[in-house]
Length: 246
Image 1: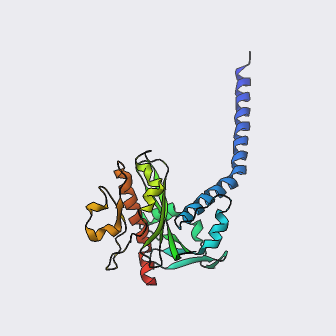
Image 2: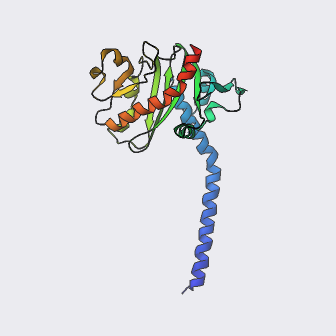
Image 3: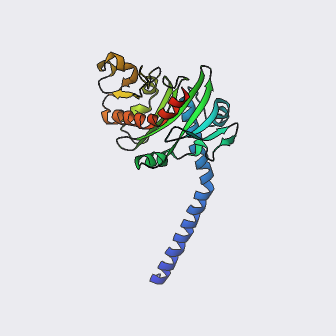
């Protein structure tokens, strides 16, 4: 029979060994995990530009398509610019910004910054805006691209982590994102109106408002409303910058 002292020492040693193994594994795998996260981020940005990329060509396509990365502050001013592989203005690269942290700063009414990507496609220059919001059960996110007029939507992609399969999770389907193409985030008077994900469909909206709306997910009202809020909260951060460029 083993004594209590022996059992205690044995258990302690095993715990230390296992902890050391797990810690080592975490450190070894961290660079690979970070790269996978970066690749997924790049793929989402490119998809909003209607470019499908895989893990092998994502970084190459990103370098070819993205002309500049801009960091925009809460006043619409450019505080950082990354182009041709180097920072040419400011100290921040848009790709490295933590959007969750910056949107939290916004909620706390503190200074904040948001990323903006300028890309060149066969249809001309477009602006790609990262999106982040809160769904029914967890985060929702995506990217939205605007044409050179800074109002008409060129492309979109959405994702989720925990929304209900068959209901709210349908925002990740390509068909949902395709509804956004050609919609506008400014009205004819130049006022920012964002995009509404409308329960009952855009057919229930006034005729002059339908260009600013898409159909909600059937049975996914809460997630659809969350997408509407996400779009307004994220897109409004660029209004001052867009106005300054017109």
